[in-house]
Image (cartoon, rainbow, N blue to C red):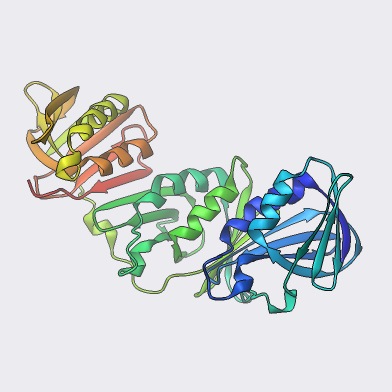
Length: 363
């Protein structure tokens, strides 16, 4: 292998793929990045056996070849080099890297031992707007569980219903659902939340179309010159829509910024009680008040004015409420519940494409 590539392109590609390389795995080669030539381009790839990311960049290839080198060292080294042209040359299992000022050699492992995710031969292919997918993932992925004892809840469900495409995630204490566009296909797959975090980084600020191909076991996301392949989670996802109430006995419409501020203040006093805050909705005064008590520190009550229908109170985890309010994007939010032991629902007032459910704490 012998080629020339710019520092900017190589550094960008390493930044995309190197994070997936697993230095704590049992296979040493999993901490490496695969560098190989392909159709007069350079391909960089890394995998942890569940997720694989490939990034293609332009290169001036004089001789074809492939090698794997330690991902962390390669990324840190290339990132430290000044911008300009870099020469890469393979000598047996050693990768020689040279610029006008630097000459280095990195010991690698032959590419033949690098694990490759199997190709998706018979799968469905469809497309989604990259900016809509990015916004949807930002509003949903944090609600997925990190508890491996219930693997299905550690994923993000991508599914179609009535001609629309949805993202959904829940950890059984909260639930987020986002509509991200129309869908002509029948789609249902459960993607690990870790892969969705990687996809979010890849999406970046680009508004490119994302091409999705999947079968029963894997999914491939193509964004420009980057490809991400992930193994799908197995298991039956809960019928989460049964959790979403169709009507509410108590409703409040408030400015999101005001509710966010009073929740932030109340959460400071709620640390001692595992984040527990009590929200009281008063139709007579047209206010929603939040009370938190810390026996050692004191107590706090803060209120926000709004348009109120019905009366009642409910106890929630303040961190979950903050996460939900930060995920909502409108100026005004609706806040509704039916009783202090039933789910609370938050939505943007102007749009109905995002729903956030929080289960109450026992007060």
